[in-house]
Amino acid sequence: MQRKALFTGQCTGCPLRERCSTAKAGRIVTIRPHHDLLAASRRAATDPDWQAAYRRWRPPVERAVAWLVAHGNRRLRSSSVF
Image 1 (tube, rainbow, N blue to C red):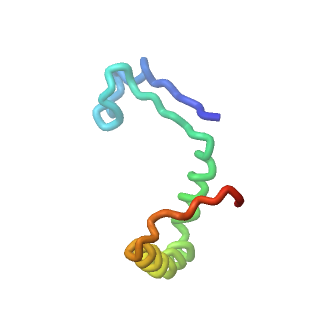
Image 2: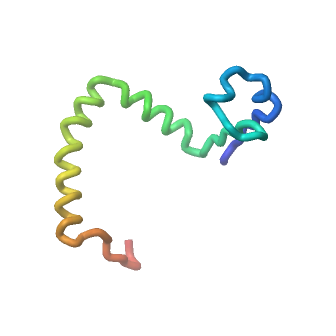
Image 3: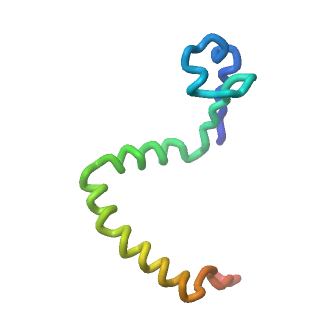
């Protein structure tokens, strides 16, 4: 379920308004269904062990994807059976 927080009246006198929003009606913050999962993933990404594994595996994965794209494999074949 998507949720929204409306800051219409509170934005008027806020000293940080210039940095937050330029909307005349104030700021609307939308919280998507996967917000908690994304927040947990971002927290996990600050772990030095996670960063080391990411640095270790990202270059080979990027290279493999680039190789596939260079050889014309931009799209997967569609199949009616998964």
